[in-house]
Structures are given as structure tokens and as C-alpha cells.
Amino acid sequence: MKIVLVCAAGASTSLMMARMKKFAKEGDVIEAFPFSKLEEIIDGYDVVLVGPQLRYKLGEAQKISEGRGKKCGLIDSRDYGMMDGEKVYNFAVN
Image: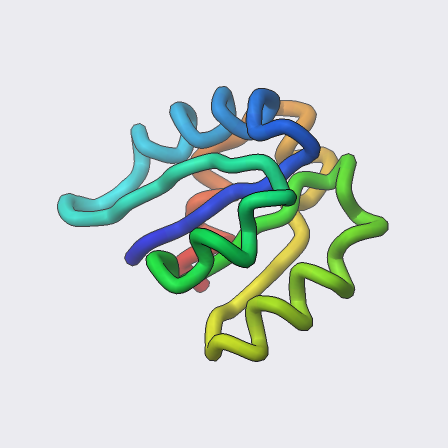
């Protein structure tokens, strides 16, 4: 599975990305980018996860994602705050 995390600048999701990779299966790809790059990079991913600080951009992310046959979801703010990579990884997979 190929998962992309998007946030305002891609910096805060980098830590979450590292935490998620601890639970990823072999062959999984997890990367983080600024939201502004989503349209450029989306074709290389299966799932888009939006950082909770960009909740206001969720509708736009869903429109972009669903238009290309991709799943999109908002990372739970508690899981993000706790940097719970296992929960966020499982959310992406499911």
C-alpha cells in the first residue's frame, strides 16, 4: 500500500510518517508532502491522509482524491497529537 500524508508544509507529518513506518508491512510506502503538492503526486499513492491541522482542506482533498479513484481521510487529532503511528497506519489500511 502506498500512503501519503499531507499537511501545511509537510514538516509535522514527517514525524508521523516515521512512526507509521514502524508498523508498515514490507513493500508499503509512506511519505509526507505539503498539501500544495497533492495534485502533482497523488497518482503514485493509494490513500491520502490529511493532517488534522488542515481539517478545513479535507473537502478539497477528498475531491482531488476521489476524482482519481483514491481513498482520503482525516487523521484523528488525538492519534496525531499522541503520534500514535500504529493507529494512524491501521486507519490508512482499513
